[in-house]
Length: 258
Image (cartoon, rainbow, N blue to C red; front, side):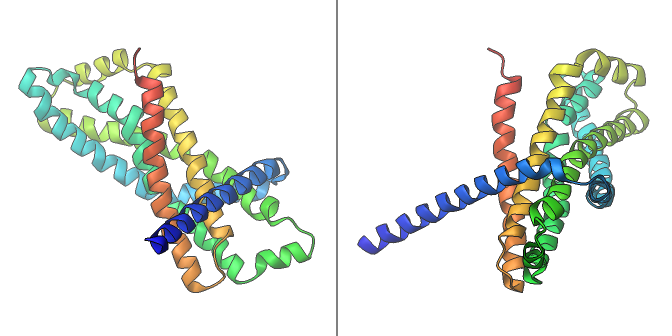
């Protein structure tokens, strides 16, 4: 029994130590953002955003296909198939667009960032920068964080837009729902502030969370192949859980009516 309590206590202390270390890392990184140069930031936007565009667009298209198909068969039961555009748009801009994009972003861009920084740690490149008086947080991490921060909302917007087009193709072109009703009801029901802006805020928060987790795990990874692989796995798991948890909190705050 005493051994069990000791192990539990050590686990709790380890978790809080890790959280504290993450908090210090995040604060240090945020303070260094003003020193990031423009050219590396643009390069990271291209690396993070452009290379993630294909999987985001294709996933958004198929999510739109499914929403259009399933939504029609649910709404037609109640004679409300004309509201298909409203259902699809609200589902995407409020919820599915930011969340699914963030999960895909963590799996593609987050793991790439962790592996890249972890390999730099294993190759002692970060230590060499410190020996030369170069701040690796400002030189290496800050441009990658800004690139992820900018890329994530753009990718979420593209996901939602492509998803709506996919739902329109299935609902209007394949099934035969009225195109005018699809777009007009969507336009009247979707509010730019309550729906689109809140979804944009979600995507920004998710981008910050995923970028911080990815860079932190790469920066503190053990300088071995096993350490880098474990850090990459931890990035996906923790980022995904963090996105889902933040989504619940933000949804309850943004869309719950009093």
